[in-house]
Amino acid sequence: MAKITVTGIAQWAKVFEENRDLDGYQGQWQDTDGRCTIEMILDQDNTDRIKASGCMSAGKDDPEGRGRAFKFTRKFETPHDWDGGAPTVYKPDGTTWNFDSDGPIGNGSEVLVELDIYKNKQYSTVTTRLERVKVMKHVEFDGTSGISGPDPFTKDVTSGSVASAQTNNVELASEEIPF
Image (cartoon, rainbow, N blue to C red):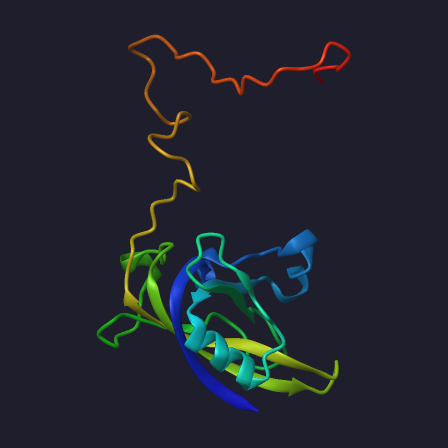
């Protein structure tokens, strides 16, 4: 049907062989040895381009109010050599990204993606496949998974006292069982 490009903010970019999602929800992607995935926050113009292309995804509102969030995927193993594997990822200067030397793509990076949107005759639906990614403005991956401050599990506590665990200060009614 169409190849389109959209720009947006990358979230959870797993677009390399080394960091692809091997399982998916409840193991649904195990039969294709995983998928390369990227969630993108798109502004209204890019959202309109997605909708006009025939893509079946409507996206969802970004909780931070930055636009609409869409998830794009690419099967890793397929019967064909042209539609599987990791998408080609490019640096801002147009050279190929190298996961080992350049690292993963961090949340908040500005990216341009190419999508192939086509009719899937097997399922009578429209399918969207991630083809290529260009990192326009890179934000380094920090690996904290949402933890603010130093990771309490990797912090060195051998020379001092261990801080007490934080509690949620939730009051229980007298008839509630706390477990």
